[in-house]
Image (cartoon, rainbow, N blue to C red; front, side, top):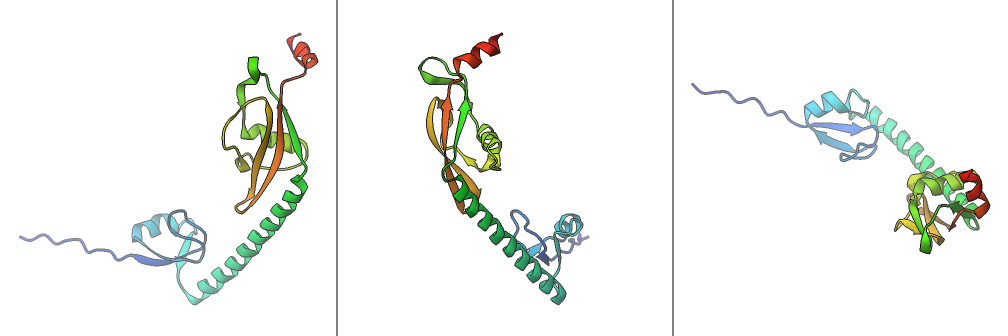
Length: 168
């Protein structure tokens, strides 16, 4: 007796309706296995069969997405101009020699900017090395994929009056 082999299922061609990490971007036509299409892409509305209507719909989506990206870039460039002369001060406890008991984090920098009225996400704060000493630093801010700004960061020890009030 010979066993019959299961038929090999051919990959499906689908058009992506949004970016799928590791697969493609909006409007890309991709070949995927039927199970992946049936169980993941199609139920979540991430892809559809390619047709003339779909091509037109995706062209409109691409145009809107491009306009949105351009708008975000313009807003980021305006923010760069606003951040040009901004400096922030962060108080942190330090030991002998100016070494901090912790480090200044991206979240702390983002919060300090927020207090001054500049909304920058903590993930947009770029620290090449951890800040673990008192001093003056230039901190890069990635406002958009291709737009960066820089602010002056002053890491200072708390004033003695504040330290004494905190102890009481």
